[in-house]
Image 1 (cartoon, rainbow, N blue to C red):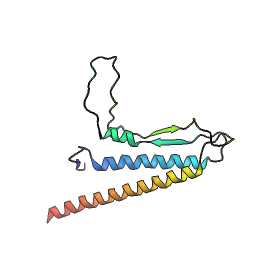
Image 2 (cartoon, helix red, strand yellow):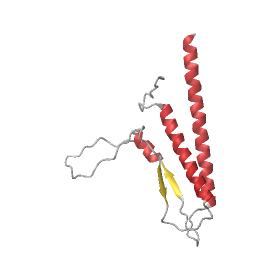
Image 3 (cartoon, one colour):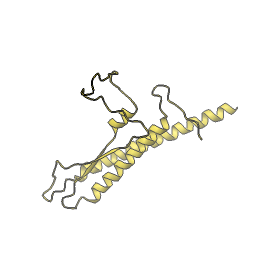
Image 4 (cartoon, helix red, strand yellow):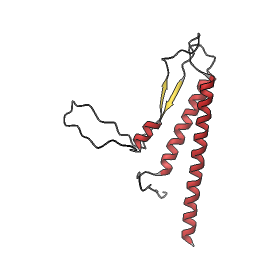
Length: 144
C-alpha cells in the first residue's frame, strides 16, 4: 500500500485528480475518433464528452455557500459527487443536422477538438511526470 499525499488546500490526492482527468481525456479521444470514423455514415450523430464541470464539482472547487433544505419539497441542492465516482458524460448530439444525409459530424471541428484534447492530455502527462519526479527527489533527499 502506497503513501497517500494530500494537497493542503483541496484535501485531495493530486495523482487521483490527474488520473481522472487523463481518463476523461482518453474517453474524449475515443469519442472523437469514433465521430471521425463515421463521418461518411448516413444518419450518424456525433457524440460529445463533458467532464470539466463534473470534475470541478467532485473537487468542490468554487463551491457555493453552504445551504440546507428546510422542507423536502424545496428544490434540491447541487448533487455532490466523490472523486471515486467521477465518470465523464458522453452525450449524442441530435439537435443538429450538418448535411443532407443526416450526419452531423464536422471534420474541422472534430480535428480541432482532437488537437486540443491531445495538448491537454500531453500537458497532464508532463505535470504527472514532474510531480512524480518531485516526490522521488523528496524521498531521496530525505535519506541523506
